[in-house]
Length: 595
Image (cartoon, rainbow, N blue to C red; front, side, top):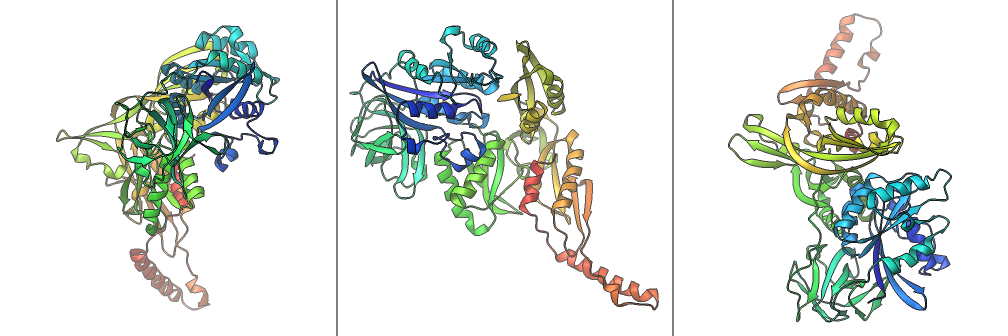
């Protein structure tokens, strides 16, 4: 046990975590030449295409130092704020963390929030200054930032370049001296923490765990604490690039268990595995329940695929436990699910994964946040979608969630960032100069305002330099209205939004204009209206496709032409009464990208 080291790599997005993981795997000969490729742990196509890590990946390495062999369990984590739940789970399974900071960009918001997560779990931190081979590396400045942030000695910061491999051997050595071996008693009752799981069509659910106390052997009779279901450990093993079966795993080991579980509900991330005969008395404190920030409806394009969609989302939830869902129905789209996501990128990734991994064609509604509605009768309701809002006469007041946002940026972009936040109804709380040209701004903003495109706008006005991190701080009174979109007088509930009264006119007008471009022309006029209650605030008309009925009239009296046109007009009117309008998927998505 004294030769085991469990650690994770934490950093802001794009600071070189996955590349550093590649170098560690190469130096410990975990990968053969044939298996070597860039970002080898990012196994999903989506991760490779976008150049981001979405899932935490665990892998075991063996490292020889001064004649002794050490076992390193490395967990590579995502860097985007939308996947911080993955990071919190990885941290719970480790004793130490490599904090990677990009020498060209310095400390950014997600670096700080991930660092605080690690410090909350009392992890030993090793600071690594990456990308020092770049021409624009600010080595001394960034070292100052790290010293200010953690209070390390300057000489303890390891200079490295994951691209060239410089300094990586120093990191491997430092892990032995700095990160403590796991604590625990191999003879105590078994306590193993499940930190991830995945569905395999042939083997059932494979759960990944970290043993805190006790020992597990193949064939053991085990139970899961939360569900109290009992199983036989058909196969256990360690996680190298592939799964490697093993007869016995003990304290500090990170491994997997296959016991033929088919029902998704029986495996919960954060649950404890223990023996049936000699169980532990209490479950391990796992992870806090994750709070979704953004809610959107996901509906199958074909109503018959409803059950299949439920299975797909359940399988996806095994592998991404930050996703939550419950059934709901909509007048326009039929039966579907109300899903909770951690942010817009998370929502986009879930949609992509449903399409690629499960071949599901889905429609996603406009994202919303959760509001608290207090009625005149004194009841309190949680409203996740506009159709759940009571009649305006029954509402006493509505509260919306507010966040505290930390934005770190270069000084020259402060003006435009402040304007963006104030336009989004933000109030400034604080500003701190981290160095002469880097500033941290703290704003209080309504969560509903940042759901759509705040992060994208922030990136574009700061040329990609601003970094953004937030947490929900409180609920405050809001003057919200329900904005409905009507097509031919029929409300399309999938396009309804709850929006602040001040922004509703502008939003409604832009929405009508956008839908006019996207909805194909029909044989009859289509009226697109935006309404608040019974009041219409904007209107566009899509003109009918008309046949030239007067083509056969040449010469003669004008009344002949008029008669034909009147006849056509009557037909169009009748058609409009019975015609229905198909709204293409692109129209639902365009609402998200109105600008």
